[in-house]
Image (cartoon, rainbow, N blue to C red; front, side, top):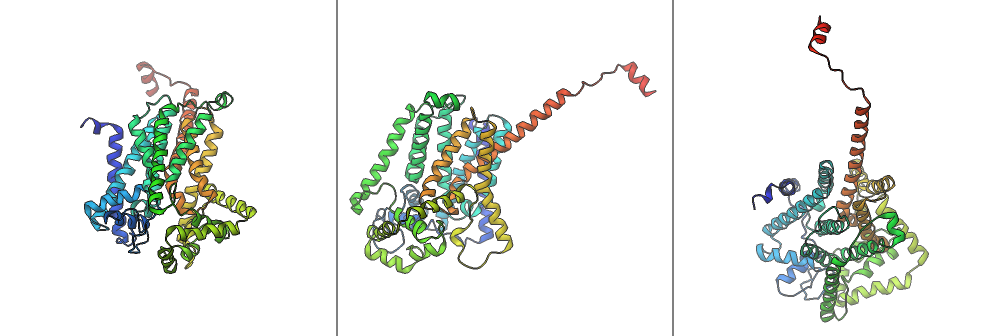
Length: 452
């Protein structure tokens, strides 16, 4: 046991955990605990689970209304913590923070282990930690689901990459199955990413593509795990069939998000005014309507409006706008633009964060792909995960909060770019040193003659 903690990855985990806990405490001391909502709908569903009412009451209505509003994993995690330390207490809050810091520290240690040189290991670790520190609200304060999806996305990438790169030992199958099953239960998009990556890597084995990309991949070990993930989603849908009377594949609020982004919004991005007008969390009238009609009937109105007002050319224009928002320049805090004007410092901070979550990782990806397209397995798997994770948001709805789970991938891309630059400079300096004439060695007699 002691020998395990002497390994480099274990030391990275311990250092990362200490740093994350320290920064969480510092940030809470600075903000005086004034930003904590226990994940909004997640915390309310978890409270209902603790009370024995099952998955219900996402908007704290006091009614036993069954719900499929959110995926199952995070409410179950919160419910377990509430059972240990009380429902929405300070003790449960610190337990959530501790679990989050441990999870992010584990991810940091896995990113460190992805590097094949010391420079790459430390750059991957440093860029990941730097990205988290640039977004303290999401990772060191509010206990929404961003940290969980960020962690499971990166751990899934780690498992998939180790099945591609034959120079690395693949992780144990039980570990891989656990990570990808947790991902499927945390977000339907993570299951979509896993299935998509495996499908595309399988297609890459076709001779015409394999000769160009050289991406070795054995999908057979992953087939039982993928089948189990699909079975989990099917069981989740069957549960809702029994309680709601409708088979819900993952979460029920698809049509509300589609309506807000493609019918209500002028540019295709979510904004606070649009959310406040119809969301039960922010609008008491909408909350009462949700209570009166029930979840499915409440959401059916958005489906009906979307089908009636759907305009294909306008929809495609909004998809293009969301693609630019996801990959080129993200409009930061787009859900909070309705209100008082922003200060110059806030605008500068928004601009810096927008570059971090869109243009910088995209430019890193393009540069690395042009520089070394063949044999860069980590870059290929990272690019696939990024594209597949972002595509549902681009097609349905998008704003800056949906970029937060991708921060780990963005940090990894920047780390790969910095490592590429470091190795290039190292090679150039080595070439220059080899081109210089060797130093002249003088004998003692020659040294004495020069001194005299």
